[in-house]
Length: 286
Ligand code: ARG
Image (cartoon, rainbow, N blue to C red; front, side, top):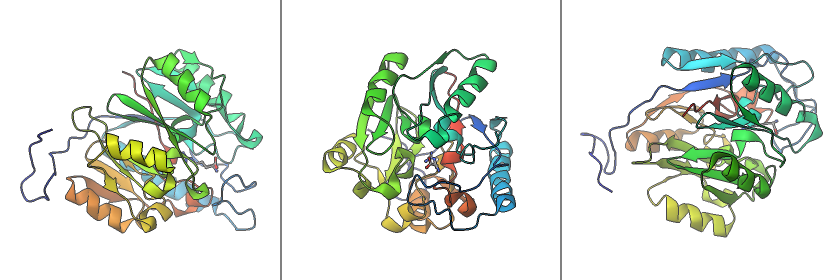
C-alpha cells in the first residue's frame, strides 16, 4: 500500500487524520479496590478516590477539548470497577452487544450499561456468552479483534460476528498481567485504508502472534516497559493519542509514525488494572 509521507517524519509515516468520536465514560465516584480479579489489584494497598476522580477529569476534559462527544453514565454504589466503561458493551455500526462479565463482582455492570444504551435510543443485543465489551473487542479497519484466554469466551466472538455481520478474529492472551485485549493492543488508526496498531507480542500465544504479524506487518511493537505501564491502553482519534506518561518508548514510536502522543496520568486507576482506554467506551454509530 502507498501512503503519502509526512515531510520531516520517519519513513512509513502517513498524514494522520483525527475523526470526531463519541465516547461513554463513568466518573469514578465509587472507585476502590475491594476484590482482586487481576494481578494489578491489591486490596491491601490504599486507594485515593479523589485522585482517581481528578485523573479521570483530565481524561474527560482532554476528549472535550479535542471536540469529541462524551456521554456519561451514572456510577452505581457497590460497583467500584464501573469506571472502566470500555468493559460495559461493544458498539459497532450502531449495534450494541452487551457485556456479560466473567466475575460475579462485576456482573451487574452488564445490565447497567445495556440499560443506558436502551434508554439512549439504541437497539441492544443481550449477550448469551461471557464477554467484557471493548476490553476484549477492538475494531481495526473493517475487522474486529477478539481477545480470549482470561475473560471473554471465544463463543462470544462468534456471537458478536452473528450480531454485527462482521469478521471477528480470535486472539489468545497468555500473560495474566495483560488479561484484556486492550492492555496488549492499542488501535492507533482504524481507517480501513491504513489500519495501524501497536502491540506487545509476548502477551499472545505463538499462533496469535503469527496472526497479528500477518495482519499488521507494519505495527508498532511495544516494549515490555511500555506494556507494563499499561501504555497500550491508549486511546487514539486517528492522530492524537492519549497514552500513559511512563510509556516513553511507545510515545517515541508514535511520533515516528506521524501520531501525536498526549500523556495523561491514570496511575490511580492503574491500581484497579486499567488505564485511559479502559475508562473509554467508543460508541460507533455507523
Ligand atoms: N478491575 C477491572 C477488572 O479486572 C479492570 C478492568 C480494566 N478494563 C479494561 N478495559 N482493560 O475487570
